[in-house]
Amino acid sequence: MDLGKLVLCCLALLLIYSTEMVVIRVSGQAEGLSVGYYDVSCPNAELIARQTLRAAVNRDPTATAALLRLVFHDCQVHGCDASILLKPTANMTAETASEKNFGIRRLDFIDQIKTVLEAACPNTVSCADIIVMAARDSIFFTSGPFITIETGRRDATFTSSLAADRALPPATVPLDDMRQTFAAKGLDIGDSVALLGAHTLGVGHCINFVNRLNPPDPLMSPLFSTALKFICRLPSPLNNFTFAPNDLTNLVFDNQYFRDLLARRGLLTVDSEIVNDPRTVGFVSQFAANQPLFFQRFTSAFVKLTRFNVLTGTTGQIRNRCGFLNP
Image (cartoon, rainbow, N blue to C red):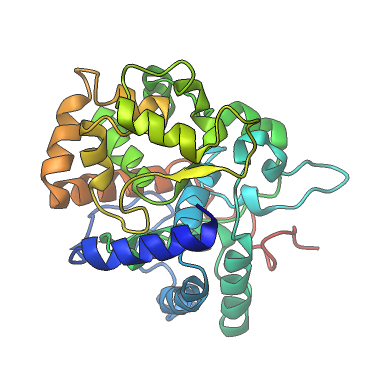
């Protein structure tokens, strides 16, 4: 199935499976961050960002998944500091050059938001905050909860492809390694399972799960495995241009991912492991049966992740252009 047909199919599923939007607020704040940080310096910052992104997403509905993935990949390397947006120079390599950042896209949407915000409030809103806002709004646009986020992050002044290689887990990461990755950021096992629910949006590239198809992984439904072999055009040579939807409603932020896991329809190794591990299967079952509970736990975990190890105060800078350091 080509991308155009997939989008049309998923748009139809969006109309069928779309759920009522839920607004969830999380109390508390991290040092240097606050809810409404720009209320005085740029009162309409979040509204401007949301409206600009809405217009962009209307042109490309698949961008919501890309922007949600972007925040995870930015925050995983040192913290949410927009280092992933920096272009390479003579003194540094770009995080996007890492193979683990394959498929990172729609950075142009972040640039569009930054341009509009710079016109309204010059030198005020960080690219790091824009990434988090864009992810939050992408969740909301796809029928997920509206997450009240803290802002006040500042932007990194260095980037490194090697740092991304070291910090980003591979697509084949096992559950125990994934747990350690999230635990290092203050997230418990329930938070970790909830954040994996972000896989409800977007697609998985065949190259990232082909290891589970030949030979067939017993943790995967045989019928699902057969379908994936057809989609991935196996046993033909594999490339980065074949993919499968992450779940049955992959343009909607819902709990379908967890329902699919219970039916043994998880793409990645960790997807299947969390439904077969006694430490995590209870969370999978709860989230599959109770979407508001999933939204609540995801919201809490998202806020924890995006406040971890951020630059605030006088550290870093507010970059005028997200891809470049200020002169």
